[in-house]
Length: 114
Image (cartoon, rainbow, N blue to C red; front, side, top):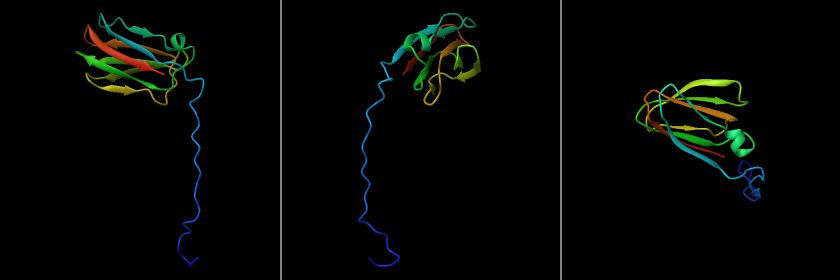
């Protein structure tokens, strides 16, 4: 080996791990907020049997969505605004329940949680 030159004879063996058995089927929600001010509750914990840690919410319009997310079903992060055609990524969040409200009646949403 020559001094001050990197040693290219070392290598790393990478062994991928299989997905966790705790990850089950995803749950999808599609619908609309029929009347603005009357929110829709997405019971993620009840549907998956556990909290979600991945997924998304999409606003299909015509108005804005107000998203409230809870990690325990009691304490919420309030009023995350989602404009029309925007997507809110849920990756890395601990999601127990999602409350979806709208500024315009009939605002459609799609949600997928894993």
